[in-house]
Image 1 (cartoon, one colour):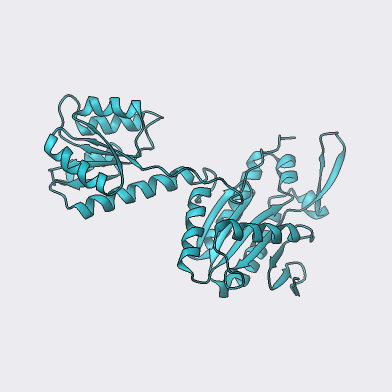
Image 2 (cartoon, rainbow, N blue to C red):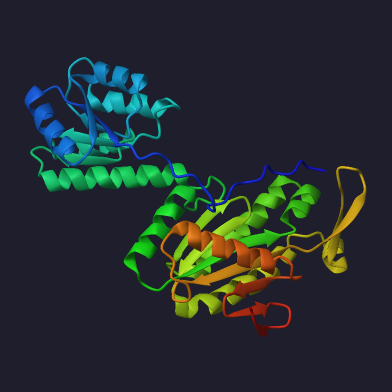
Length: 334
């Protein structure tokens, strides 16, 4: 029997990271251009450090890893292409977004940088708004990469918090679906990590396929969220449940599927019987509650999800009604 996964803290109650200025390293041999870049980036609110050549850039990155590197192509000692390659080869620095500064416009020159791992290019002379836009894009990409789940590739808690904050600040109606797989731990213990991962990936695929452009996030473990329009939230939740129940049943061995349960030994080596995996979906609509902060939204979803888990089988629990996937009955929720 495989060991169970460590519990994952969902976005509810997550402690925000302290706000700090993003750090930008400018690697440029021209002192005049470094001065211009430093001024433009500092005025935009970034913390700027500088390096006059390729070796100094590598030393600066090793001393304190920046959030973005602006890397001149033509520098003494070590050129920008080689600096880029070395940063990508090292585990500690391979994730840093690299924007190359170049006076060259030939396709071959850009290809060399891209093949070496550069994320973007800025051609000299540049326009300040373009520079700042490319830096912002690089930071957004980096933040999403750090937050993304390695199992599903979906945005994680950092991006989820940002998306919820954005939805609340816009003051436009939206609905939150918070999803949790019931009896997942027993399935994972019984069949092992590989099939447990397959169950999580199956749900992720269903969400992406059916959400049709809506925001889908992976809180961690077997917990997900979807942010969608209020008018389609209920139907979307029901569709997700129907597909989840159908597809995850195929992950069980035929004998277990026929019986409708699995037997798993607990820590006391006593065999317990567990039902097939099911899905609890908490549905919260912003037009029903005057939500002003992500924590309020998460608390409402958490309460509804706890209620849903007391109901056998896959279920949608909302503030207006509950639909049990087994019998398609709609019921009022107090």
